[in-house]
Length: 246
Image (cartoon, rainbow, N blue to C red):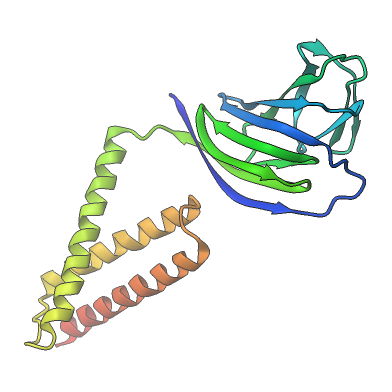
């Protein structure tokens, strides 16, 4: 079954880094491909008039099978923590194209990248889809991308989702009507109506929990929605209990 990856940018912040060169990078492209058992990452970095013999690149923990080449030639690399020093002394060219490849475990939830130079333009793609692009990135900026693996939804899943959306619309319309007629005449809530409303509210609360676990809702939005619909559900259940006692 085909795997689907959803990536979302969560932060891009400049931070102070000491001892890092201010030499610039023309363009920085990151391509992430999701495979069955890993993520395959290719970084293409274009340099023009780069007058230093060493280029520094930051690679996150967990990276494996790291390969580096400059203008299609293998170059020496030294590792110091997460920083890799690429020796460019053997490359005699005014324009240099660096290619860096590595793999990340399929369990990786966040792709991290820290930039050690000023960059004119950057583009990040995940499974051939551009998820982030920007210009004039400053030294010390960092990008974090949330990676979520899953499967392509089946037709039954899509049908259930569409049905739930319809139920949500019905509930919203009912709530609006309830407020509009309140000033005119009291609404008679039969046990059947209350039970239906309770079932709809339970479905809404389950969907809210599901979307929150899937990180599709912020914590603030999640708390507000949960509090509102939970209160509605409690009110309905109280009315049902009162109806049984009468």
